[in-house]
Amino acid sequence: MDCEGLAKQWLSAAFEAVVPGCGGGKVVPSKDTRFGDWQCNDAMGIAKRAGKNPRALAEEVIKALPLPEILEKVEVAGPGFINLTLSNRALAAGVESLSDDPHLGIPQSGANEKVVIDYSSPNVAKPMHIGHIRSTVIGNAIDRILRALGYLVIADNHLGDWGTQFGILIMGYRRFLTDDERANLTVELLEKVYVQSYNATKEDPVWLDTCREELVKLQAGDEENLAVWKRFIDISLGEFGRIYDRLDVSFNLYRGESYYQPMLEPVVETLKEKGLATLSDGAWIVDMKDEGLEVAIVRKRDGGFNYTSTDIATVKSRTEEFDPARIIYVTDDRQQLHFKQFFAICNKLGFCTKAALQHVPFGLMRLPEGTFSTRQGNVIKLETLLDEAAARARKIVDESHPDWTEEARAALAEAIGIGAIKYADLSHDPATMIVFTWERALALEGNSGPYLQYANARLNSLLARYYAETGRKPKDNPLFITGDAEKALALHLLQYPNAVQRAGDLCKPSVLADYLYQLSQLYSSFYQSSPVLKADLAVRDCRIRLCDAVSKVLRGGLNLLGIPTPERI
Ligand code: ARG
Image (tube, rainbow, N blue to C red; front, side, top):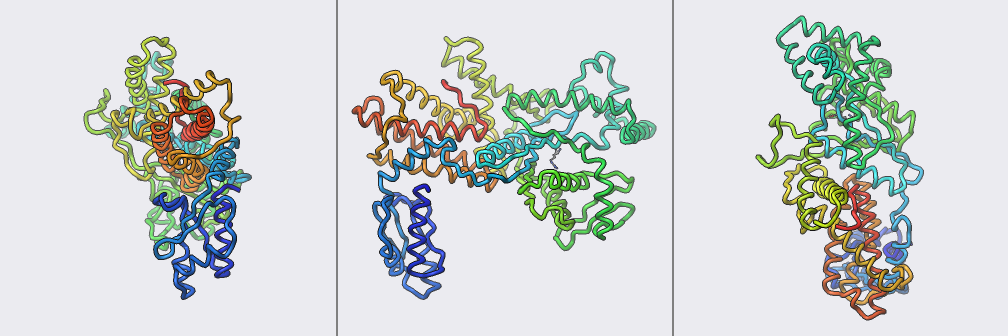
C-alpha cells in the first residue's frame, strides 16, 4: 500500500477505536505544508454528532494507537484538525516504488471493466471543423487515461454517415461535378456541391423531389446509390485518417449511424409496445414531462427515423455486444438536451441496468476576432488550424536550431504545434468555452504545452548528461529527501496516481493537466534551489534519482494527454 493509504489505514483504525463506527480517517493533502503533509478534518463533524469536544476528540484519536513508521509526527491544530507529517524515509521509499512501478503507481481500478467511448464522430462529406477538435482531443485523452487505469476501452467513432442529406448530396455529386472532379473527389468538393444542391431544393420543387427519390432509393439498397454513398464515406475517412494520424488518435471501431439502421424499426416498436411512444400529429414521440424534459420525437411524420432513435438503438447494440460498465459520449454542449432525452428513454426501456451513460459536454473553442482568417471567412477547418500551429512552431524551431536538418526541424515543429493545440484544449475544464490565442498556446513560459514539453526535454538532457558523466543509472541510487524543495516535489509525485484516478472518474483530463503543470513548477523551483550535477557526489546521485522520477511521471502524464514528448527541444 502507498504511504497515503497506510496513513489513512492507521488513522481510520484510531478513529474506530475512539468512536466505533464513526467512519473517520480521511486524509487530504495539506493546504499549508508548514503544518504537515496531509490533514484530516473529520474530528469536527464526528465530535458534533457524538456530543464531544472536537479538539479533545482529535487528541484522543492521535494517542489511541502507536504511531506507524511512515509518520514522523501527528499534531492537532485549531478546532480539531489533525496534521500528519510523513517521515522522509517513507516519502523517499514511496517515490522509489512509484518510479519503479511500470504503472507509476496508477491503480488498476478498471481491471476487467469495459468502457465504450464515443468520440470525434464527425459527419461524413463535411470537413472536420474546429468544433470537432475538442471531441477528438478530449475523448482521446479520456480514452488513454481510462486505459492506464486498466479499463478495457472500446473507442468508437460514431460517424454521421446516414440521413436525409445523402439524397441532396447524391444529386449534387451527379449534376454539379465534372468527370474530372468526380475522379478526384475531395471532402471540400462534396461540401461545395452539397450547398449548391441544398440551395436548389429551396428554389426548385422538382429538384427537391428528385433528391427525396434518390434518398429513398439509397435507403432501399439501390446498388448505384449505395456505391456513391460508400465513395463519400471512403473519401471522408481518408481525410479524417490523415488528421487522426497527425493527432496520434486511433479507434477500435468506426461504426457510423448507418450500422444501426436495421435496428431502428424494432426499437421504436418496443417503445410503442411498452406504451412509451405515442402518436402525435403523425409523429411518434416520447413524452418526458415526468423527467422535466421536452418531448422527444423517435419517428418522424414521414416515417423516417432520427438522431434520437439511432442513439437509443446504439445503446442497445453496445450493451448487448459489450456489456460495458460505462458508455461515455464526448460532444459539444449544444447537444445536452438530446443526451438527457435518450438517456432517460434508455432507462425507461431498461437498456442500461449496468451501463452508466455519461455525457461529457464541452464548450466551444473560439478564436478572438481577426486572428485567423479562412478563405470562406467563417468555419475554421481543423486541418488548417493544425497547419498553422506547425508553421508557427516552425519559426521558433528555425531560430533555435538553424543547424538541424530540414526533416528534424519539421518533425519538432509538428510535435510542438500539435502539443500546443492539444494542451490549450486539455488544460481547461471540458465544460468551459475556450478563447484560443496563439500567444498563450505557444508560449514557452507559463501554462502551455510547449512549456511542459520543454521541461520534459530538459530533464532528458540532464539525465543523459548524468549518464555520460558517471555511467550510472539513476535507478541504482538510493533516494533521500533532504531539502524542502525536494520534499515538496516528492509529495507531489506521490499524488500522481490520485490525479490520474480523478481525471478518469470525472472525465476531466484538465485534472491531470493541472497536476503536470504544478509538477513542472515544483521541479523548476527545486532545480533553481538545488544543484544536481554540480552537487557533492552523494547528493548528486540521490537528486538525480528524484529527477528521474519526475521525468517518468511528466512523460507518462503527457502521454496520457496525448501530447508528444520530443527528446530534445
Ligand atoms: N455526428 C455528431 C456531430 O457531429 C456527433 C455524434 C456523437 N455521438 C452520438 N452517439 N450521438 O455532432
